[in-house]
Image 1: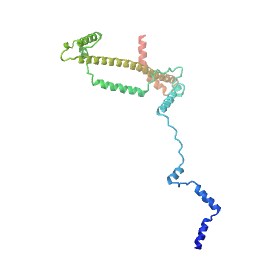
Image 2 (image 1 turned 180 degrees about the horizontal axis):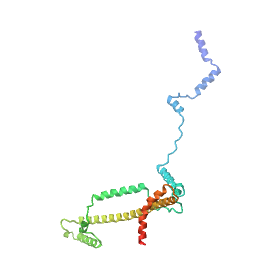
Image 3 (image 1 turned 90 degrees about the horizontal axis):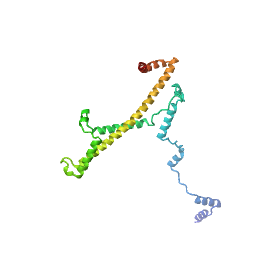
Length: 243
């Protein structure tokens, strides 16, 4: 019994230092043990932010501008070709991308295939045989349609008033389509003429540069000049004969 009481007393009587340590341990916040994943995440260095990629259109525009700048008359390429800002005229090609031009060709090719499903292959004789509609004939048809609407009893049994009106709507629609196509054809031809003039001017400028180089006996400029000169000999002969 004496030994038990002594142990109990020993438990109760703690030193002030021990009491302070015990109180500090109780008031300290509990820290959770770090898991393996947390340790791995801490060990990995932070990845540096990736630079933002330029938009594709912007990158293409930069590339196109760089290419355009390299072809301007003031650089080495322009000087080699003998072109200067004073002699080289500005190009008059419309600002249309080649991709847009190819897309237009595809669109019109698709329209052509669509119209081929409905159009008959007419010969010149067939076109003469069929009735065309001019201003005078159109006036007659419109007057007849107006009378038929007022007096449907005179319509033949195989022609209804609805069919009469619908045929007129078809004709007017196809005529409008033809007018639009003619306008498009005229615009496309004007653009083509401008583009051909620019391309031909490019060839003439190269030819002039080769001719100047051939006078200085630059190899192989003389061979190139003699080969290209053939295209102008016939024209010169024709001009001399007309004088």
